[in-house]
Length: 142
Image 1 (tube, rainbow, N blue to C red):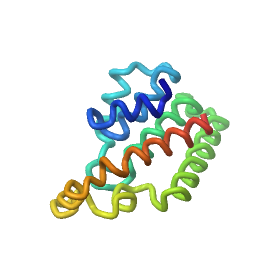
Image 2: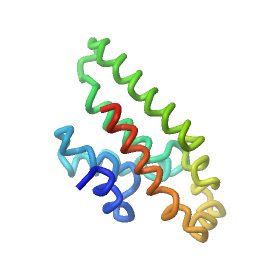
Image 3: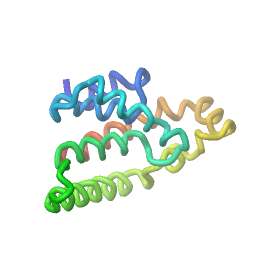
């Protein structure tokens, strides 16, 4: 099963950030429970329709791959910075935004926006594409 297939299979049960980090967890030696717990607060643009959860999850995966716990490791810091910047640029170029508001066209953190998103089934229609893109771009970087 590909990472994209795994993520889309879990979409609906978990938020966008969780499905992304879950798809990369095994490869990056991240405990699945820890992966799901640490990413649980990033869905829905951290509840404010800001940075898309799929984007957050991909940035987490990139950081796990290239990051370091050693604050003096300047090479690692630079690698993460360049890698995340590359991811963000490619994602925004493809979709025009990296926020839930920008991607869905409505602010899901408001009652009115959430209602429209639900009525138009925008999460079900659009988010799988954002998840797929985030995984593909992150895989190329990782």
